[in-house]
Image (cartoon, rainbow, N blue to C red; front, side):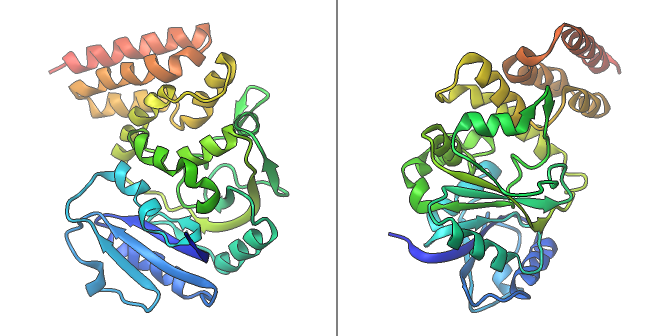
Amino acid sequence: MYNDGLSIVIPSYNRKEQLIKVLDSIFSQDITTLYEVVVIDNCSDYNISEFYTHEKLRIIRNNINVGMSTNIVNPFLHCKTKWMWILSDDDITLNNSINIINNKIKDQPNNCAFKFSTEGTSTTGLEKDLSIKSLQELINYYKFDKKIRRGNLVFISNNVLNLETLYPYLGKAFEYSYTFIGHLIPIFYALDEKQLMTFSSQKIVKYIDPGDNFWSFEKVGLGLTTLSHINFDLNKEEYKKFLDVVFPITYDRLFKYYFKKRNKKGFRNYKMTYHTIYFQNLNTIEKIKYYFYSIILYLNEKRK
């Protein structure tokens, strides 16, 4: 069904200059083993093919803007190879990253996925590879000793997926695309059925701060509140940990954002987020703090 080899698939929208830099970073490497690079353009204001061409570049342009969450999972429809590196349109690949990935997939061809390390996120310090074979082990890796390794779980650009192994679960990416992490849903399902995944200590991409695009984190935060809809084989305590490690935005940070933004959606969205996913994991002091923040947001919206 799939060709052998590796493809890079990039969902993109209105980031021409950044996208060109990403493509340059790819094609400056040894690409002899790379099957193709696919850009899935979500109906941008320009046609990237007018600005960039390459014999291994294929461009798919959506007829309409299908939204960020849907376009993130569209790579599953268009990748022709067994292995897919899904890459953001503003994160720069590191030198020799393609060779690093190819060596890993040759050594562990039956893995359902690899999550590589990154430059510029908080979880880049693995000293050696770590293989996990269950959703519980993934949760335990990210949440340990009452601490959380925040940073690269929901990150897009460090994931290399085995589409043959994940094939039974690929439809779930679209079914739960509204979570805004649809690209990870097939991996979660595979791990729930004891498939093997590896966290690699090697870095393949540099995280680029999106700058003022905090609205995307707001959308992601609201989308992640719906993860509780998915019925994984986890007990109540494990599911609480799962929701906690997947959610990347602390309630303190989101409060500061909504307080500064000062609009009527702030109080509502803050309550929606933390009453459905985060609130259940707060201790008593943190719950008091949360209620205090909620009152401040409510009063802040009433100010003229």
